[in-house]
Length: 385
Image (cartoon, rainbow, N blue to C red; front, top):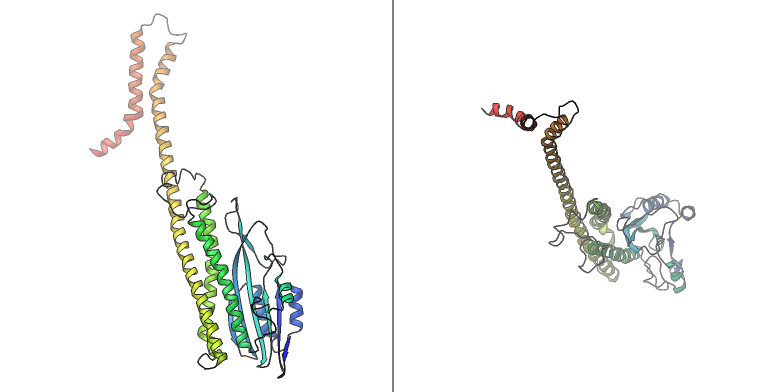
């Protein structure tokens, strides 16, 4: 809590990894007028929902939620003890080298009584962090919601300016995390020729084309594409919602910041809006990259499935031809076996002449070949005539 001489007061509450106990303690200390908005704030934070709004229904309230994903090495995998956020593998589970994609969210609500008294509540997910940033903020005397970029002894007194300052800082952090994540996906899909074998070839090149299907008899490459497609769709949907949220906020709520007025305060407003717009333009470019990747992988995955089906059909045709050849050989060999077995019986006299053996063999062979190969084609000959 910070006060100044002109009977002004602002309160900043920073919460890392919100738990049910902390949420209950916060609700018990929120004013009755702001209680409905604060309950909705907690609900949106828990539901991993993108949201930005300025409300004047009862009291003046400014609020934003920035859900995003962060990529971290799996050398030490972190899990959320609250079971609120989910960690997913970046690559398929059978990969030797793994990274994890963690859900994370920044949420801020500022409950304004008037221009001189207001309270800000900021919630951040930091379960995947290697160090405790809260202790660092306290030791260094830094402002937590702004990510430690502002000292506490130089506070921002205007609630709208504080809202835009925190939003600009945090959306820059979100943009940096999205950039790292998309770049990692790009490197994985289109690796450098000297990259490790754990990378996935995103296209069929000239060297891999001859053995592209033969090297993947168990459709492992198709499974890999399916996994990456699922990751890309989830990321693309989340980023699209965030961009749509900002566009709606800029269109409908910028009037609350009096951007057309002159003065130092309003110059700061315009500067923060311009900074946020720059970051959202970067996010829009990243979103376009993911859309293009999804389209390419969908086409490639469909091509792989069709090619695999064609390869299986060719293999089945070859097997059928081999079976047909073996059957013909067996049919041709059958008369020889039968005639030889008959003339070898004890009931046949020993003085039987050899010409009868050969005549029987030729006659039975001719009859067998006619029945096996010529007789089935007779109906076709009749239909042709």
